[in-house]
Amino acid sequence: MSAPKKLFIKTYGCQMNVYDSERMAEALGGKGYVETKTPEDADMILLNTCHIREKAAEKVYSELGRMKPLKAENPNLKIGIAGCVAQAEGEEIMRRAPMVDLVVGPQSYHRLPAMDDAVQTGAKALDTDFPDDDKFDTLKARSKAKRGPTAFLTVQEGCDKFCAFCVVPYTRGAEVSRASDRIIREAQELVASGVREITLLGQNVNAYHGHAGGLAGLIWDLDKVDGLERIRFTTSHPNDMDDALIDAHGTCEKLMPYLHLPVQSGSDRILKAMNRKHTAESYLRLIERIRAARPDLLLSGDFIVGFPGETDEDFEDTMQLVRDVHYGQAYSFKYSTRPGTPAAEKPQLPEDVMNERLQRLQGLLREQQQATQASMIGREVNVLFEKSGREAGQMIGKSEYLHAVFAEAPLDVIGTVRKVKIVDDAANSLKGELL
Ligand code: 5AD
Ligand code: SF4
Image (cartoon, rainbow, N blue to C red; front, side, top):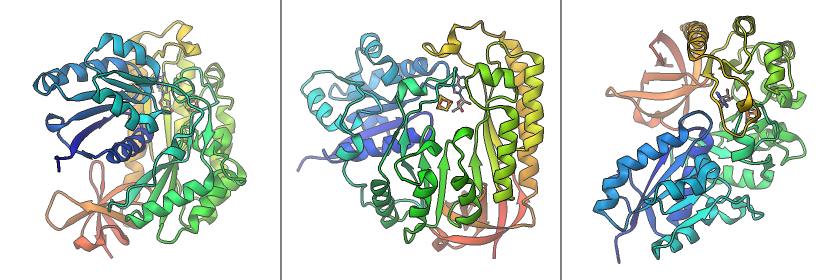
């Protein structure tokens, strides 16, 4: 028997890419590929790329540059580009980087096995279709191999919202929801492999409509899956937070008290220019309702500073909204022009203005994050332990609020949820004692 072929995947960007990389590895696993952690001994290298902000494509080309010697050493090495840069710039990549053998978009990767056949004959393969066949129908059941206690599960892809800054509706296409029975089956497969916590993924996950009861309906069905202990979901749009979903945050025990709910800006003028279709006020009212359902919920968000036309006053509105909401953690970005999006046509703000605003916003968000972490000291939380820590005898996991927690504990806590008392606050994690 010949040695198995080795596959190296490098994943950029969001959690959905992490999920896609797993599925691509499983699809190629059916053709005898096993994963390797070192590109040097790979027979195929896949870069699963992200296009959300600037310099995405440039990053891919420089990574390819670094991989040139590998191709020189092993002429049989195949190199593929997957993900959103592949979708957006597939043909351009083939032209600019002749070392690339294969380009596959996020909606076509179920065709990877056939594409592999083609590249093994020395041909090039490019597929950036939005095919009629559903990739999830073609992909096999999840691998039965034992895995860690947390997993992602894509339930919805694409977006119909068309925020003026965003490439997602172009790279991932129109909103598509997977049927809930398939999702439940995949969840059961994951649980059988050792998974205890599932994070449901979608670019606009709360617009999920593969279940008559929407995302809340799916969550309640997952609630019945034996052995599954925790459910999370990301990323949501404020306008799709329906009553049933808000209610589930108060009544579904498996649904964790953490919500990532991007607002992007606190200025109504900018929100309108962004085509967000909500106001700062409607967002604040929504947060009130969610907190009424689940008072201890930890809120996370996304912000963009320096959107075209943003004045000092607009930016102060964002700062004020952050003060009003008080986030447990959040992501913030400088606006970055994405070719093909409506905002790309507008005059851009000077870089120094954007830098200054980003620093101030990040300062405030950091304060709130630290205050939230510090407020955990003395509290009892539930930790799903995931792995051993750096120091002997130390185990690491996540609390229900998604804080990383480390504690002295025996190895067999891994994969279980344990009560832990938080005793100290480290930089990016909390120290706890097993109860
Ligand atoms: N520039 C800066 N940030 C962006 N995001 C999306 N598009 C852009 C852009 N063109 C941010 C948004 C989104 C997150 C995933 O990335 O905040 O919620
Ligand atoms: Fe992009 Fe999210 Fe807006 Fe959709 S809702 S266009 S994914 S920022």
